[in-house]
Length: 232
Image 1 (cartoon, helix red, strand yellow):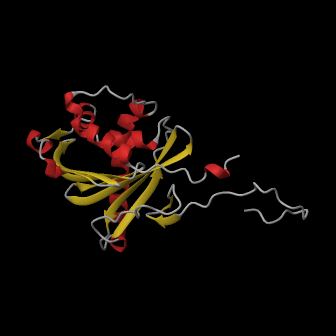
Image 2 (cartoon, rainbow, N blue to C red):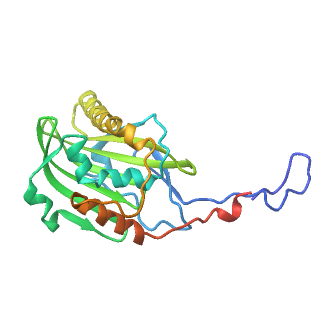
Image 3 (tube, rainbow, N blue to C red):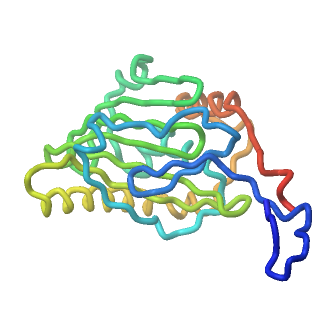
């Protein structure tokens, strides 16, 4: 709230802004859309001190809401059809590989992607925070996609590539950059779809089982707009 002006005039009563709860982690400042966070920024399988990271932007504005981006990552059919990811059909019908909690949706699957056998765990936290952990060239890596909503219906993605810290700082930095570039390249394969994608209730197919479960997760997720009274 404004308390004064340079000319000593009394400030208008509506000269105030809402203070979102924030925290700094993985090279970014995170803001939670609520009075108090419902969940904390998640940790990776290694502690922060044991990690190095590379942070950057996707660099392409998407005319969608963040939840649409996250739904794309939970859509097994799109991963197979667009990206060419190959899954074991038996894994796709094993409910132990799919976890839905109040504030998190998680998938853990073995797959083949770009000629590599991988075992990855990817999660959506809330409706705008995505994580993935796996291996590249036999080394652990992780990525984080943080989604910003600078205007209604406009999403910007910030990418964090993470690698485990070793005694070789230069090699660690290259590995973190490689994780960042890996994720950015995957997202750019999606961009023609994600740039202007809109959902309509109803049209799902037999292969949409898992993304349909994610829609249910989204429907139950709490809504909040704490800054509405501060918007002129």
